[in-house]
Amino acid sequence: MAEPSFQRLGTSIDVPNVQALAASIANPADVPPRYVRQEAKADPVVSDGDSELPVIDFSRLLHHRFSREESAKLHHACADWGFFQLINHGVPDQAMEKIKGDIVEFFKLPLEEKKAFAQLPNSLEGYGQAFVVSDDQKLDWADILTLITRPLQSRNIDLWPAQPLTFRDSLSCYAMELKSVAGTLLEVMTKNLGVAPEEFSTIFQDQTQAVRINYYPPCPRADEVLGLSPHTDGSGLTLLLQVNDVEGLHIRKGGDWYPVKPLPGALIANIGDIIEILSNGVYKSVEHRAIINAKKERHSIATFHGPRKDSVVGPFAEIVKGCKPKYMSMSYREFRKAYFSTKLEGRRLIERLKL
Ligand SMILES: O=C(O)CCC(=O)C(=O)O
Ligand SMILES: [Fe+2]
Image (cartoon, rainbow, N blue to C red):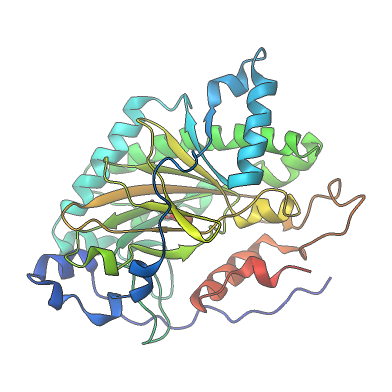
């Protein structure tokens, strides 16, 4: 099938450093209009306790006595919510605490020191802000540090902070732990979808992995700005770790926004566009956004797990045996390019891939 053509990433427009901007602001009126959005305030938020985000116990998935029951729970979480909390995931506390600590230290460094790891022109990798291509696009109230962690030969180590001194080690260790958790979850999901393990290995062995570290400074107009615009992830599976107890993640549920309250030590997992496509829409890549706190800063670490670079992304053959594919297939390389171009146009690639 012919692949649709998509505009390449254009030239980015300079976006201010949000941490420096936040530090310079004394009054709500000083927040530049490009960050202020009426809809942030207007969108309804589901009140607490209306429904509960599913909680998956990773250790039960591995335990033969409980694995069936927990796998079924995982299947429903992926199909009904596209999001779940993952507890007892086995990532050592020390690995999580080390990366959290180093991230907080990194963002405390003087701007000039952080800029040594700045995004290269027209690239999303490194320290900077979300990419924009037009003067009208609203801006996110966040600085980000995006780093490719897998495959190992794709690491651009010059963009990995050298301060604090332990940062590179902490990130390598955390990324390795998450790769293993994501691998197991993806394998169980493949099984739950009735797909043969070989199909899983063809796509996810030698998986790609990237880490996006989000820094959201406080803002005096917190209810009118967004830390991260509504989006779906272009990954297969995302695992999110919130660094402190400041909440900010909202999930689209029906027409409303559902605020996530991470359980202590839990990872928040979500299905990305790739799994929605592979599963032919059985699993949902759900829109989410990040809001801002008026007084407190927030950090989060999103780790994206995708298929191997040379794979073709399309509904699993076994799933579409008795029904029609709902999405067109394309190479993962082309998918990545298209995902970012479409996002810049403020649209979702996955909608364009629907047949
Ligand atoms: O900071 C958050 O809670 C959400 C982050 C996120 O959705 C992302 O980085 O893709
Ligand atoms: Fe996301």
